[in-house]
Image 1 (cartoon, rainbow, N blue to C red):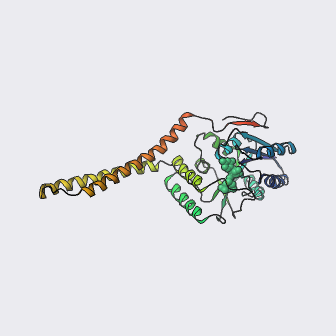
Image 2: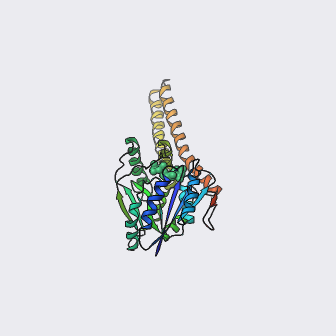
Image 3: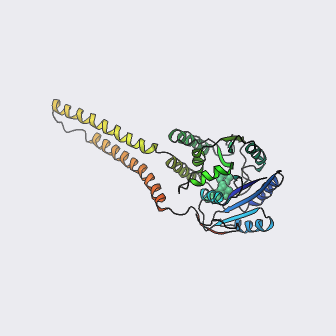
Length: 316
Ligand code: UDP
Ligand code: MG
């Protein structure tokens, strides 16, 4: 009998959680030859999420929770789940039922067949999402796939059922700046892609504003690619080359035509342009240095204050 662990990051999900718990438990209970556990990770919610998790744990021996000391973000919540999951197959699911539990039996079947190490889901459409957001999302995937060697699929969700071996590989990547879509793509393994129609959240609001997503996208690129640094060097090289040509041109012109005082405006333009480019490139370097700084500190990914899992890893 195989055991499935479902990891559920929850941040202020009191409205959606009861639906999620009911529906997912029902699907898992009805799967044959399957044991399961639900690991809820309370990511510093300020509503009644934690009380709800206490209640689930009392009512149902399959329900477990880990509660963070503050909000550490979804990436940290997923990491905590992976650290504490004991199943043979492990999945991450959003608490808002945007990841349909009805797909689980099919996903398990595919893993059981032994041909794949993970079954990942991909939204076919971005129906119900603002146009601008979809446009930026598509551009992001185009860019990151060009500049990084991790294979990152457009529309891929974090919802995937993975074998133990794959989760061990994910845990072995213990970088502080985590970008799961990149990590999943980077570690490899044989992945089956399961497309499905986008579903809207059952209750509550999305936790992602446009700017939060934008920052996440930039982080993703900086975490999984050195191309911006290379681009900055090339830009510097090209500018130096142009400047060299200009110097030759100006010296030759002076030797032939003398030195009429003119060209203040154009000089200023060039100075401002080059100054701007220098700051831009320093900004790119700054992004990488900031990441290195955080990695060098070796801070824990998360700190949990309580859990009902025996021998839970509370700090890691
Ligand atoms: N989440 C979290 N910590 C955060 C933000 C979100 O654990 O700081 C959880 C949230 O509770 C949900 C999942 O991550 O279970 C996805 O969030 P959401 O549904 O808001 O994102 P969307 O589906 O809109 O991308
Ligand atoms: Mg959602």
